[in-house]
Length: 354
Length: 84
Image 1 (tube, chains in turn red, orange):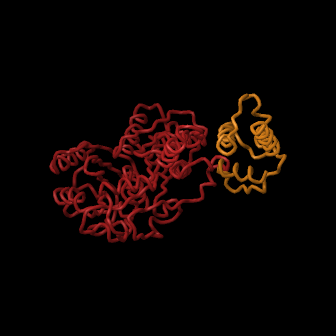
Image 2 (spheres, one colour):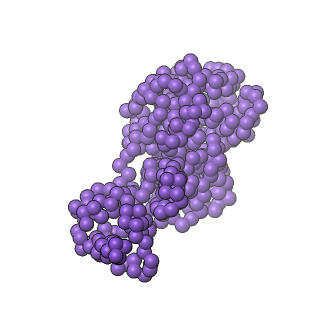
Image 3 (cartoon, chains in turn green, orange):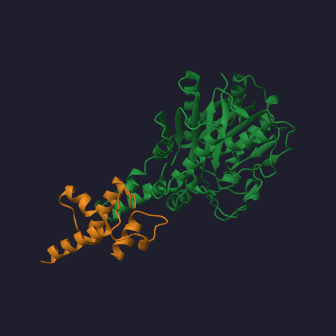
């Protein structure tokens, strides 16, 4: 069964909500924390409702709407969301008030808006969609599991159009806490210099990307979602390399069939070692593109990578800003996206031009 | 009443509404500001936080929260009761 990507929507630190060629207007940063470039959300959300929504909810609603608009549908048969952190900002507001007001006089809005499934719920409410609605909160696999659920639902035949996506936000608190873990660089680094950075740490990011998937090819479909595979805490590089080979075999694909490798290199010299090993063992002559220098590191960054790969297939072009190694291929048919989050959550997605 | 208007705009995060745009007798719910049931809960908390007033009888809600003027009158009456 073929699963087509009939529409996509993305809100990220790049101008991805704009119509036009991919990264035509590249946003270059010189900082360790990237924030989304927000479109005018009032085009999708009523003023009376927007006042209660935090950034991550608006991001999700915006990306979801862009996706179904491109797919040419008004109502999906299922809405599936993946988020590791959920609505962190409102969680912070609520918990702070809980402490400062000694558990009294707590306002309902922050509480209502603080759950992980608020985004999926708000998308459904605004669309008037009473169909299946699920949210996966599985750290670095949150987005992947939302896609997996979408694929299974489509294969079961219980839905025709499924809206699935991944999103996460950074807040001042979360950034401060994650910085203490040494995840981020100590000093600002330029966007285009990140991937050749000689030290540990990466840059923080955030964003939302949604995909309208269907077993019927839509007018704007450029690629099929051929396969998805996850590996949790591999023992060593060889395990990942073996799994990639098996994953490709399972989808009747050889290493030579891959036109472009898209990796989740993030400029952390320790974490990028895995990508080096995989590229050296399996794809030494293949062109490689990357995405985390453009969107930053976050648990559902793979959603941005998948969105970017789909756009590259649609445009049959790899923008210079995304190229990491080699020359852009003349044609883009099979694109393998390989990513890992914090060295524990490894995932791969195979897209094929249709 | 202008203080109350500012407090409502802030508490309910009424974007693009200025306190002076709210008429003293405009209905707060439905046709006027278009507030809803979640806002009603926020207004109850506002009265507690800013004026230390608790609404004992929930059935009074529609009457108290009809407009800025009815809210202000209720606050004044309650403050006078507290001082007596």
